[in-house]
Image 1 (cartoon, helix red, strand yellow):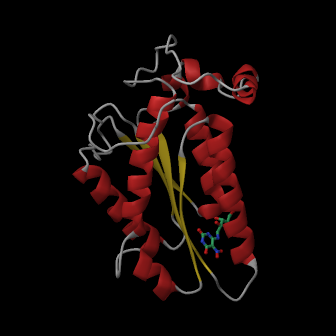
Image 2 (spheres, helix red, strand yellow):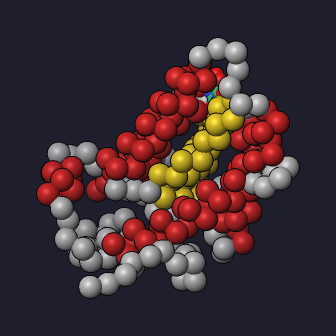
Length: 204
Ligand code: INI
């Protein structure tokens, strides 16, 4: 038997990440983004949007994040997708709808595609609490990036994928695929995976 766990000491120059960021409450999400970028950069990731390792995708709010995260995951282009948003409780029930759908959708995007999709949506009662978690006290954006690095490393090991190569279809999984994983693959849930460049514009 074996122990599998992500590690942070490998060459990650071929890892690719997508960051999906909600504009709603951008005072907070912008700070989460900075924390996230700081962590990725200090772990050796080229965070330049014109580089080859990180794409940035802005969406109106947290409600839209899962749709885009899933689409990106289906492209088979990324090792992990980090979702950033801030849902702050107001006087209306809107909070619950947005927060619940974001959580459910982000979870679904991950398990439907086999790509780690990190839940970086802050849910707080007040703007003050959100800001405290986005840099005033600590920056959860940093933690979300760490989670992405760990999961990206772990999933590469579980998939038996040592280096990123979108055209490599001969990759032998280190662990056998389960029946449900086979059925997801057979169902064609990843139609773009054979030619990711076609569906995701490099200008993203
Ligand atoms: N979006 C957020 O990201 N955070 C919020 O706190 C929020 N509230 O409270 O309304 C919010 N609403 C917008 C929502 O995400 C969608 O963009 C909008 O409903 C259009 O679909």
